[in-house]
Image 1 (spheres, rainbow, N blue to C red):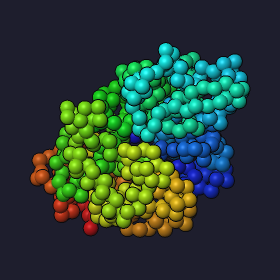
Image 2 (cartoon, rainbow, N blue to C red):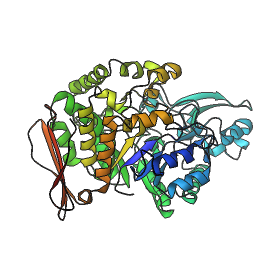
Image 3 (cartoon, rainbow, N blue to C red):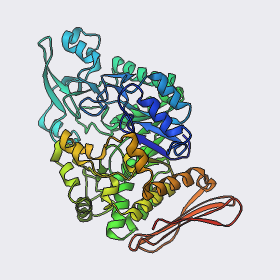
Image 4 (spheres, rainbow, N blue to C red):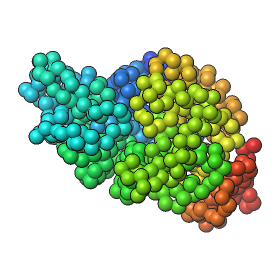
Length: 498
């Protein structure tokens, strides 16, 4: 993976029209001479582009994971993009759509179906039956049990394992049918030039009677086996887990890449509470093999800096419970209450550990603070990713939220070509692009990182490689700052955000 900033985007929401040319249009936007985003990014994470992109979960419930949705283009378009940029794609390892050909065949034929072993049922996890204690032990990211009562087309009644929604049927990942299905996805990706995959919802992929069914030793074993298979095809693996921060460190030691999901709330905490203490504590221990993010297609994670729910006394969070609650209220206030309409039990949002809001609005549309937050992100070890809405310093899309009543849609705006051109002319976006180019091109970021001593309200970061260096100082109480760097001809360059 190149040590350069990557873009995270839906293919159809950044200048797309769903007319079969969206992938080609995105390629031109990111690489064609004269485009405002030409040469800005070293890679792109394409959010689900599989058939179909508009299911129950915006493509994360694929009907056919090996087929590009024809409204976006085809595999030839994916391959053309990989010739210009590193491309990451999602492998949705935990589940597939209830409208998939495999599940429809199973529904029609029951145990006589060739795919009968592909789908997980209650009996498949608890062959001796499940007690109340067994079911309560299962870790849940959402309210309710991970089970759906279903009558199949052939009249059989089954209790299906559905971690997320009734339209997303969990896969038996250790069954030969499950392994063959997942392997076919990897082969399709490798054949078309994709060299990075993100394992979506992998923490829930393995189920075990009497356990939490989340990030168990058996889950790590599965991730290791799957990653080994991917590496044999020349593919690197990113693991997507929202969890207690110490668990993220443990995961990072066993995989290629993890997300730094603690960073977004800690940056917001630093600006809102005028202290760098919690942020610096995390920087001192965080894994270096991380993709740094401030925003993604999901909400701003809160669980990642809180106490371990299994034992809050023994495993405290990076910030206190009171400050965590106050931080959520700060986000709601900064967004003028818009995030409250998309978070928690509001707007069909079931991910109770996330706040749905654009990061720019979560910072009260303060352009200086926003650019400083990005500078902090880019200065930390790892590979930075910028979500397409964040790239354009986007506002909450309340109209889309009102239409869909899906909380996360507040941060999933559909940008037209004219909007992209207009947004790229805003000073905050132009400065962000300048910062991205500096992060991609300056040799210091390939060298040694140091967290230097600073006061309680401030942060001091530095990179060095031979004669090249780059340094960032931020005071979260006053927003005073200095971003300086060495120039090839000698002397010092500087970026200012106010």
